[in-house]
Amino acid sequence: MVSLFAISLYITIRFDKKYALFALLALFHDLLIVFGIFSWLGIILSVEVNSLFAVSLLTIAGYSVNDTVVIFDRIRENLKSKKEGYNETIQLSVNESFRRTTFTSITTLIPLLSVILFGSYSLFWFSLALSLGIIVGSYSSILLAPSLLLKD
Image 1 (cartoon, rainbow, N blue to C red):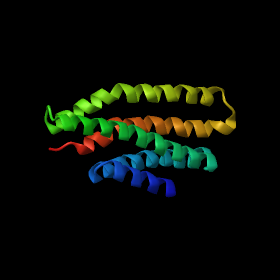
Image 2: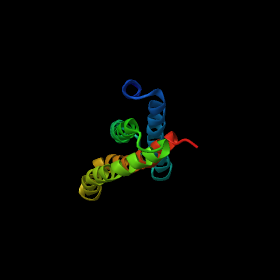
Image 3: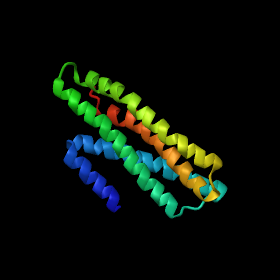
Image 4: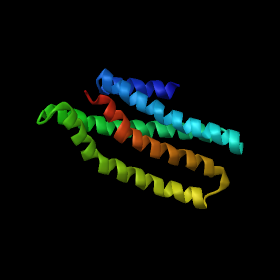
């Protein structure tokens, strides 16, 4: 809770309140999906939630917020230039950040997949949680959070 509060405080100071709210919604979306998947895994496969799972949730939170902040920062920079309309600027900003976010996620997933396939059993669920979080976090940073900023 303390780390989530600190993340909230950082985003609120760095960005407008609207950006902070949407970034936090995307963050809770990411954490909720990973937590929900592991809840089902606990019911179906008796996967236990331990301290490594808590560490994976904190890592996912940091990763997700970082991706969202990068995209929101690009949106803010492009809005200052005001060359296009508001929605077009958001789309342009997401397109400019898409490649960087995708490559960062893939680069992070490669060693995690190696640990899932070749690592010890004690790191399997941790690596799986991180992999799911990175995939969901990338999705929400690229598609969910910026789309909340769009105006009708």
